[in-house]
Image 1 (cartoon, one colour):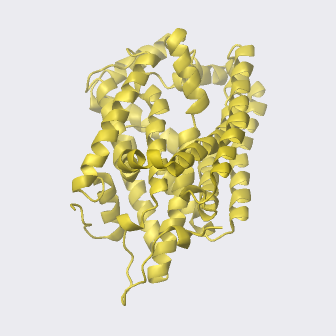
Image 2: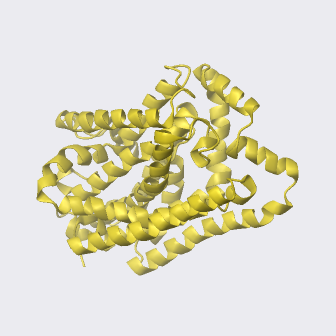
Length: 422
């Protein structure tokens, strides 16, 4: 089985070994491709949080038209995108931890200081993103979970997978606990949950429109409130467990060579078939269940989401198999290397670019399209952003070594200004 050292080109350390960023010759291009696909796929779901009230993200009946093409967009995005690309990104983050620390330890004999500086820098940049640009930020979660999983990076793949599964199950268990206690909640608590997160009241929607069509400064308190909620309650109840578990799984898959095209085409084909069968059937069962109970908040808010919570994992594996199989295909290699790999190499920059573009499109300090674009139109915007980033990323990397956000992150991590231009 391929090991990290076999799939990463690591030259012998110099006489005075120092930690340094991975150079282009050392990159595993299939990782960049998969990261690029995940980055583009994330926008399919994030666009809904930019364009509509948040409840529409979890309950398609909460806001806007849900017929014809709009329903089809919701259905396909829920089955094939919701949580799937974040699952891939989380696993890739874990793989990146193993890759970077293995390389650092080979050169210098240590990696903890470098890793925690890297995570601290990401935490600071994530907080800036969350409170000043978009409250749906995931960088803070990645930074905190990356700090938590670091001590386990040397574990065997089977131990990492088992521990990851246990952590993911803890997050699910907390949700089932809330579902179990919900019948005993006061009526006003259930109504508040429904109004804020499931089926917003007309007053809530009117207030959301007023805030989102207002100024950047006027929306700042609401953005801060939402970001803080995600970084505290949601983090402790679900994201900490799920994301950390997926990072451990990513470490295991990296050690097994799954992200390096080392396995055979049959292995990736099996991942696709099994992932599609188990993932799609589980998620569709969740849709049918919620339709059967008329999307009632008491029976759907916690329990209904668990179908996709678990179904997204095998479907994410199907995506991984499909991308790795594409990397095996010689006719696709050139296109993949030029475009998708470039998007993946600039994932941090492209993620921030998506936030900036979408906030300017939908908020009042930009074009103010919030609440005015149906789901089919949102998907059209997603396609436009994809084309933009697939074109700009390789063009940028012709003149620059890395993206501007990556350059800043690396400079903060290594404590010195990094090379930027080629």
